[in-house]
Length: 446
Image (cartoon, rainbow, N blue to C red; front, top):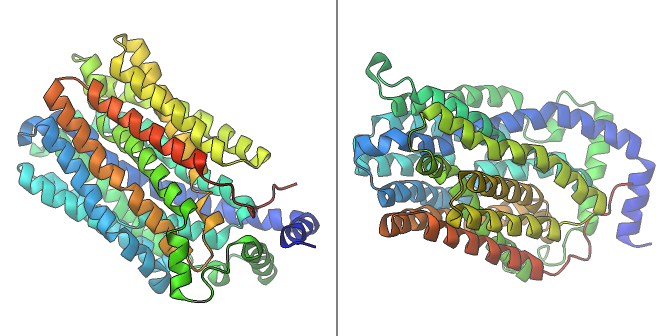
């Protein structure tokens, strides 16, 4: 009997007990991880709303703002892999709270920016502080969920992004209306009020999270055993021959064709994600120049709401069909079409529909994307491998915002910049399409 067939028998025989344990783990962890990511992403995108008034106060051109956004991600990129390598050493219970507290403090400090140069320095500090959070959580999920249950946990975690945009857009618009309160400008209040929760939750996370299931006092010995057996099944289908012999074997995993193609795909996804989080408020303002901050926030929340409604259904369909590749590629093609609509159609309604397609396509693709890397990386290679894919993908954050900003300054419109974004997304979709299917992907749950 093959390893995969044995896996299917074990899942069938122990499914009721296993599902009960997974359900308990989900209730304990998933909602909390979503809250952490909500606060993380809120701190990441708040600069896009701060720009509505901050750019004028600090004398920023569109290119300068794009550079401030990009330099955050350059710093994040530099510290991403080291951070994920350190998390297994220190343990998630220490490392994740460390990330949250330091990024919260750095985000709050951004209210002291007085011009372009000080803003650049502060954004570098925020990027260094926050580095490793997302790949760290994605690695953490592999400690608690076997491959047969991991897609939905990952999708729910990623869903925090559109939820943040949806809720954060309105919250940020309201906070900007606090301009002048206690002598602070609206954008200063934004960095203050949206940075403090990260510090508080960092302290909470230290007491709430456990490094791994063996240290979880809220699981019984039998539950830990069931969970360990379920996760051990991953080792039967994970690629082991490449990394068990030597460091050279592990390196060969990192530079295998599927992993490199996934990295390239993620570049396209990230360009779309960062454009969505960095420029949508200013795109909306360009269409509705007389709208107040609250209205801009509400309009900016509509595409994110659509993404929140679609993502669970798309993830469920991917699980039910046991198909991943096209569930990533097709939404990316939809997102590219949406960016072209925003770039070149004149009607405000058409631009809004385009933004909806951008959000739905980008976030739906990302929700499935992170189920792919563990299929091509052995358990030992995952901490560095996942961080490497994320780091290479973050190159998109370095080229996306500044390119869109420069083209906006050069042409006077968003058309050329958003066409560039659409091209990046299409290239990423093509990369995942040509990626060979993995022969030992997890069996579909019965």
